[in-house]
Amino acid sequence: MSFKIATYNANSIRARMPFLLDWLTRESPDVLCVQETKVQDKDFPEAPLREAGYHVAYRGQKSHAGVAILSREPLTDVVGGFAEEPHDAPRLLRGTYGPIAIVNTYVPQGRDAESEHFAYKLGWFGRMRALFEQEYAPEQWLVWVGDFNVATEDIDVHDPDRLRGHVDFHPEAQAALDAVRQWGFVDVFRRHHPDEPGQYSYWDYRARNPIERGIGWRVDHIWATAPLAERSTTAWIDVEARQSERPSDHTFMVAEFDLAGSA
Image 1 (cartoon, rainbow, N blue to C red):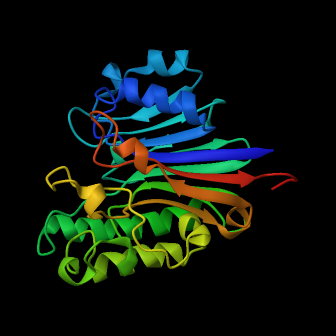
Image 2: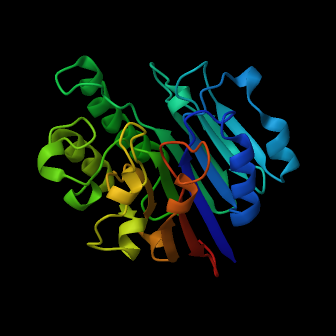
């Protein structure tokens, strides 16, 4: 049994719908986790996704944030947000797909390193560590994906010396995220592409020819607990999709697993 999961910051799911449907037809993932859907729940474009063969769970709000999980089979145990205030449901959605627990996040960006928004981002990672400790175990099959708004290594950005201190490439943000990783996660992409520079998932709209010039960041991630990561067979970034007409500023990151046997 194989399992294919992807993550994608859509920067408005309604604006990307034709493109997204084409991608789903071409790649046929079992699960696609989407961030920045930018639509409140009552307006979520569920029908075309269901017609494409996907069940949909989502939590959103108007014009900002929003998360969704598209799955070939219905998710169970679907929960949006944290148990305590602030719930942040448009940034956190989790459920179970067969034997695999799935957590989809759109982590706060932080705005400025001196601001309360950055402090909130750091605290958000602490809340995620607590959630994993309370609700899951490192021994189970669990995959955590999404736009983490953190590039973890120098090779994850095009100009580490200049960008160091940016809220998405800040030592404090990296340390806060690493504290969650130490709970029991493996970066599945880096498992298959160790020490490989130039592997980006985000390119700023404002840059001229950013892909051709290599001006990118890897802030989108697929992390899995060790027992699941050991079953990963490949991981890749769909750069071509970012070069399509009217793309998001992010693109798809994909990982595949061989689930033969039992969890």
